[in-house]
Length: 115
Length: 179
Image (cartoon, rainbow over all chains, first blue to last red):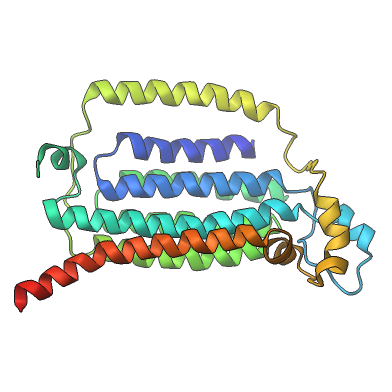
């Protein structure tokens, strides 16, 4: 159920990337796909009635290993979120430059202008 | 219980995403995508990932600032006509094909909440002794996979450098025009 909803969110983003004319909306569709993939990876690492992977001094280590959620997807998604920010900033910079050159965010009009 | 909350928040996220893509004004689009991001960070809290939730909030605020900078005081009029029909239809067909394969692939995954990872117990039992970090996510990021983090810093630096270079040319051109 939750996997299917993540997939739906990804498809909403894909629809935005494919079918929208506005450059900002294309960027936002990309961001939504990014969110959906991150959420999906964290969801795969979840354990039912689990605890956060942070040790307590009173906690037995075997109990902790049995109860804690998977730390590996969390660490890698942390990396992916920050890289997503960098990619979004780059795309927005390109979009601002395109707007300054052509005076519009409409991709079909940008395609028709030459030079 | 957790599953119910996550499902509700995910439905709201999907609704906010649709609003973001269909809104008429670009500024409301940006605000709706902010709602999507903050709900995502709440879901991360429910999934017992506090580090990710904090990072998501910070990143979301920065993204909103960047997007508002891009959209405010610009031509935000609504493009009412969609793209040409033929590419649109091809896109829909491709999305359907993707949907079929994705549901097929999701079926092979273990059910929600039954994590079967074989590496996780190693990190969880030996993380404290080997790295001295009580937070296992930190020990994975900064010790076991430190080269990944170095690569991440490189990618981030390159992206920021590219963005600055792209926006910088305009400033220099304006200086030349004035001077």
